[in-house]
Image 1 (spheres, rainbow, N blue to C red):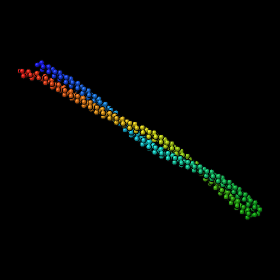
Image 2 (image 1 turned 135 degrees about the horizontal axis):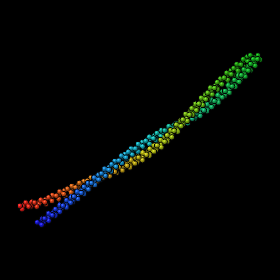
Image 3 (image 1 turned 60 degrees about the vertical axis):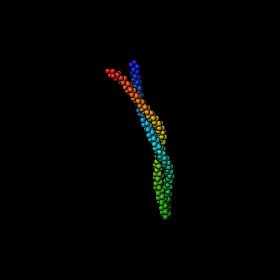
Image 4 (image 1 turned 90 degrees about the vertical axis):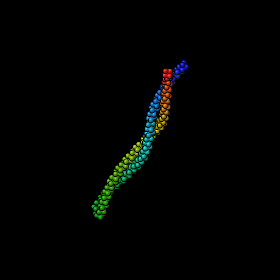
Length: 284
């Protein structure tokens, strides 16, 4: 009897030890599940950060490409404006040269008109002199010679009048040429001014093109670096998710083992508690 009692006591102690171990195992399982949940939360936060980094990287890559396209467009505009500026400058120089030529022609024609005036006045003087001589010859009773001289004097006066009229027309032509030369010169100056403005604008566009291209390169470089960082964060997130799953599964396994041990211990204790009752029934 003493041996059996001792055996029952040892069995009860073993069952209680199993229950205690089961509680410890369950606590460890719960702790591991909590760690897994914390790891999962960290993975979720890391994934959120990774997605934001990925969005920023994508935005920078797109903006960088857009900036470089803008740089190419500005470079093309700069080339066109520079070419137009050179053409305007060439046209302006040509017009200024033409203006100088017209001014020279105006001066030459103006000089000719002065000569016409001098010739006209000289012819008028000769005509008057011939008329005076004709009057003297007529007084000398030389009517034929007087008539000839009078006719010649009239002719001289007519030539004088025509020459003076031509002087007026030539002078008007010289003045018109001078005005035309000034107008052409103004056009030439305007063309040169426009050419300079276009060339300055072309230079500014070229500078903006260089700036935009540099900004685009920097953005794309940053985008590529952030894209690589986003991939690293994604890998870290996946690793954290795997660790969390492992921890949760391990915790669940420990809780399952604890429940099994508790069930076994309870079964042993129940059998031990029921054993004396069966024995007392046989004695009766």
